[in-house]
Image 1 (cartoon, rainbow, N blue to C red):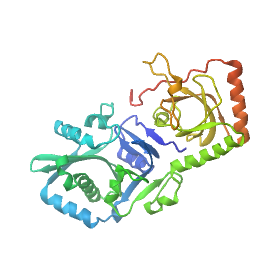
Image 2 (tube, helix red, strand yellow; image 1 turned 30 degrees about the vertical axis):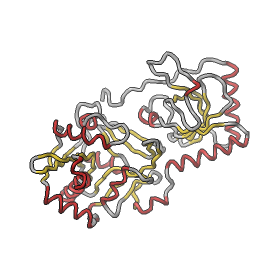
Image 3 (cartoon, helix red, strand yellow; image 1 turned 90 degrees about the vertical axis):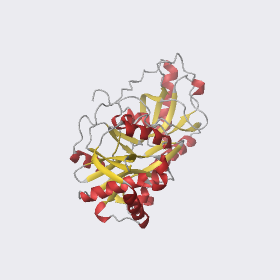
Image 4 (cartoon, one colour; image 1 turned 180 degrees about the vertical axis):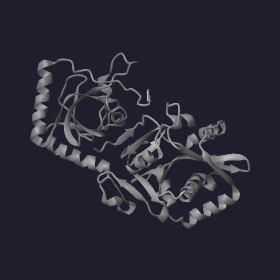
Length: 376
């Protein structure tokens, strides 16, 4: 299974031992849940992400990082303690939030709790002070052998002092003093991105390989196929099959693929790219060829558009353009696995006849998008 995003919602407190295991299998924490991010749609761009970690026993600071530590240790003071959300930290978060791109939480407590009224991780904080003024802080989780950096916030007027990097260096110093084995700073991307500042922290990293499910040297990352490239390879096979039988299609990107991971028990479509077959003419019903990342198969799938509660009707003429869908999609049934061009064509004929002969209303998909954090 290679879902672009994979969520884990703990039912209760995550023990230090359990945290180690989750981190070691490629999860990272955001809010009160954990994720594995293989493909990320961020600022209208597809990013192939790499979850990284640092082996602390082998880690050495570069000269530039040593300079940041020496300079800031001489200029500022800091404390390390169990985390606590205060009004002072909330205000600093709201100022810092303007740096975030994408859908950032409106408050620090919203980010940490995510609609869940208590913290379920073993979380600590580092607070940075200029005299008695709080100018930055970071939160991190501690396991038995691991530490995971969660978030770093700082006063924008201290940007030249690299406070964000500084708090991560202090986290690593603290982890080394505890004789922890691994430091998990989060994920970076193959592509240039705002997440790649973490690569300043060390000359050597390991990354979690989604194929072998092992941590390997970061230097070998380019020998592995990017997940989105793997998806594209599968879709190119499907394009050849469609062209064999001269079936017209449109290649569409689906920006809401994350919905299928966030609500796994719903009928939300899970794939990233679709080949929309052109000659079905039943309003509200579409047929796509997709690579299903959960079933790891090319599939011929019937889909429809999710109707929101506030909508009286859907304008089906405006649900996609030349490049991508503009609405959340839901699976209809049946879905047909196709392993060659003949199975694809046979499935196409079957589904076309099924709906054109009967013209019956399509089955109602499961649209219960229940928040997994509720009733936990």
